[in-house]
Image 1 (cartoon, rainbow, N blue to C red):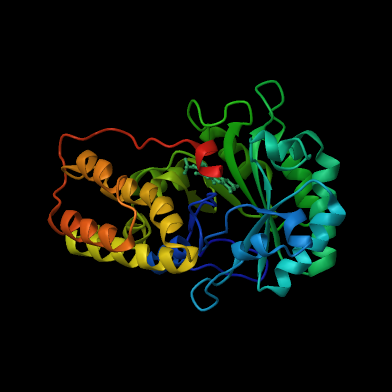
Image 2: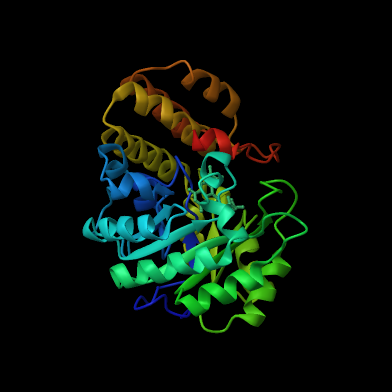
Length: 337
Ligand SMILES: Cc1cc2nc3c(=O)[nH]c(=O)nc-3n(C[C@H](O)[C@H](O)[C@H](O)COP(=O)(O)O)c2cc1C
């Protein structure tokens, strides 16, 4: 059993990573059902949350039966705003508050939020303290290894957050300057695990397969493994990690249809839902024969009925393409909007 996070003893060490525009309620619910022990929300603006703007409150929708514990990720740079927004989050059901200290996007870092907090360690620690005081909830943080190659201060950050009462620390071991380039440096995770003893360490970065996930646990000693891009189009990774089988073609078809219907309901507007689901369809189709033809086809469809029919036909018959060894392509900034 992995080290608890505050009062929460999680059932296994596997987590879904927060992903803007992806880890929305429908996908989180699927990942939980597949076996993930924790699926934090995508980053939610503390400013918007504090003011309870309708747009921000939409991000807080969750399934309280399935999403337990419900971890809400917020971003912001002002301790007072962060504390007040976390309180609002708690009123809406948050059971863990996760603080984004890794987002590299300028729109976020220019407000002292996201990975900019790595450059102001006292502020980062203050935010943790203030949220704990305001909510009494367990507070977790997600960091990168530093701002750039000359300032990899993850140990200093981790020590300060631990002192402030942080309940768990997720580390994506790339610097802010690296974005998504190069490889995640797992030795950083191992280094944190050796030096930080009072809070669990959540390793993250480049876990694409079940084998990678076990290797990260073994090689770094981390308490939990957080999977982002490796779960796109493949939430079954959590089922496999918890002893289950990979998806059968029928299961894949049924889940794609279920996900799409849930997404339609979640988004509320048919055209927006159809368009924003295209990325999921591309991921679900990845590695199947005829995937590129299918992707081109669905990119021209604008009604839910047409998409449902296309999915039934494609996923009902699709076979694995043994010749396709390409990596999934994904642009973080595009997904962030
Ligand atoms: C599309 C996308 C959106 C992301 N959004 C967030 C986010 O909202 N909050 C966050 O902390 N990290 C975010 N990340 C970073 C991931 O949580 C994770 O740290 C990163 O993708 C590395 O893990 P992976 O190699 O398993 O994908 C995002 C990543 C992607 C690809």
